Image (cartoon, rainbow, N blue to C red; front, side, top):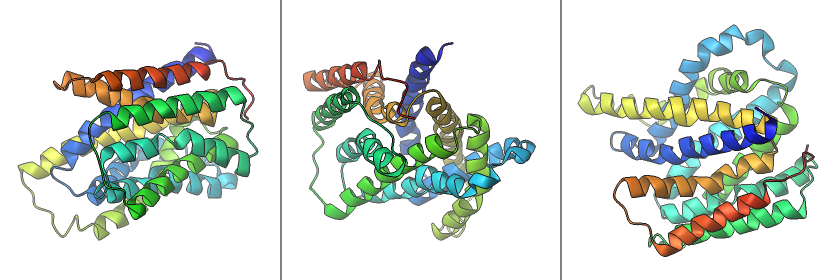
Length: 294
């Protein structure tokens, strides 16, 4: 498969997986608090990927260790907790809009830290798609009082995602995607996630019953598909495209969420359909991006 087709296939797959993760998060939260879900999904992914990391330990990028730690913490650890903290105070609509700002942050971070170049066409495409994401979110009928601190936490989480994405592209692009994912979750994040689980009260409140096993089942699916596999696909996408293109997955995720809602019996409003069309129109602008952008 040529790189042009491959990046679009990866983008769609990643959008479906991450867009479908919300239902697994919802099910997991029926048995665990948000902090436990965040720590468990990272810990389980790390344990599952540990054999792969050990088998490829000689490929561990020692000279880029600081960049590996930076990418891991900003892309796969800190936001896992900032989002649930913020979403206890603001609506999912607001959280979705701010998450959809990631391409904008990628443009800013990429230019400031790594001197990535952005074309006018890319900026137009991002603005169009972000407008569609706002329409999609606000047309859902879910309001929410403006609260500064949660908004700042969401902005910080999205900024961290942008830092991680551009760091991987700039400093870790020579590490194969599946090996990089294994290193991130197994060598870097297992211990922090275990510590976070302790502070979240998981072991103090642990009760072995059917609810525990049900919750672990859902969070395990979330770890395998929405965390481990998703990050492998994300790192692969970064290797065949640009950070800006890869970040547009956050613009497609609301579309996937709407589709899941339709399958669950929800009705699609005219404005939601219009928002989805606008998002896709913006992505069409990104379709013929130059290969530059380092």
